Image (cartoon, rainbow, N blue to C red; front, side, top):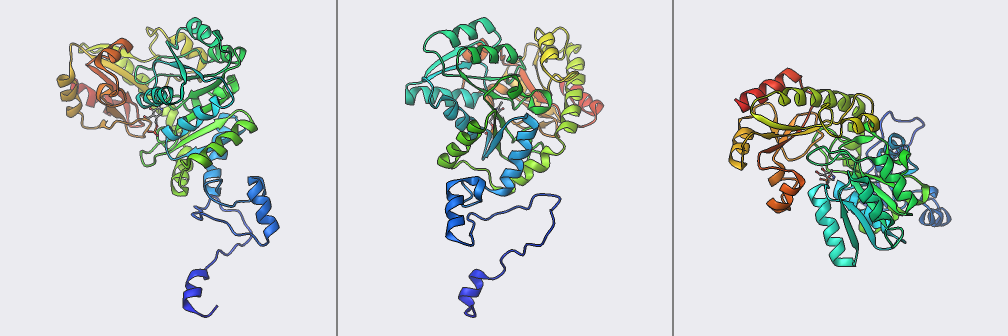
Length: 394
Ligand SMILES: Cc1ncc(COP(=O)(O)O)c(C=O)c1O
């Protein structure tokens, strides 16, 4: 190999010395070579036998997937290029081999609602929209023929932090022979592990608390069974919505401090909710950590003791879009960013962000008013956050 054209292509192959790195290497290879064709053939037949092509499986992504599997106490996971890609694959798998029936919460992240509506329009999917807090109604929808299908909900809803009785709902789904997909983005495995309550698949926008630093777009699905995990990976292989190794590295690096961050964010959210609750310009605070909240007892029974989530919303008294925008523009510490789960506290206006796709009537029916502000509590000093809200509300 003395010709520079050939040398340039082949020189500098990885040196492998014994030893385990303390962090997973970022492996950017899209393909893997094998010493002989039989080994390659085995790897092409089963990922357990080796890596072949990075759309099938890749080591940096697997390090992140294994960590998520352990945190969710599942059987296996697949990472995705975004939370929406993860939800798309999870729904596809949950409905595979089932009658085309989906019982879905009316209070879902806006894009998830749109995705479900599109699936319904394109593929004769019978969607039964339900108030997920009405367990009787959900049970009836699940048990009404055809048997089976799938159930989709978020444990804590966006943006009003309403709590679904996940334990009871999952029991009904199981009894009705339906698969279940939980979007646990708001709750994270630190607050609840839905697979241990009987969910089939748990999906996350890892862009949020899992990554945690506002620097990565990622998603992940964790399955309760080996077959479920295999099905999600196979679906991803066809959809091609894989996470890049760089982003998998960031997601895993973020995940290392998930419990610390989420614990602090939950504390700050409770502090902010209590402060807002006594403010004369605030008409209502939506946060299950407040004893006056109708979901308080359920949240206390379902989530990690002392934790009620780090998302809250509040209505500014008699405010419309103009007043809400003016309030948001006065914020100096809290950032106006239509995302959540960051170390920084973020404020957004659900009517023009997460729930933009809904008509004003649909938003009002869900209780999302024109003066509604959503907060994602970060890890800053609570007094600094309260000071910022105080000056912006003044
Ligand atoms: C609850 C929930 N699920 C899913 C998503 C979609 O995630 P991503 O933006 O990573 O695609 C979001 C995004 O805000 C979300 O809030």
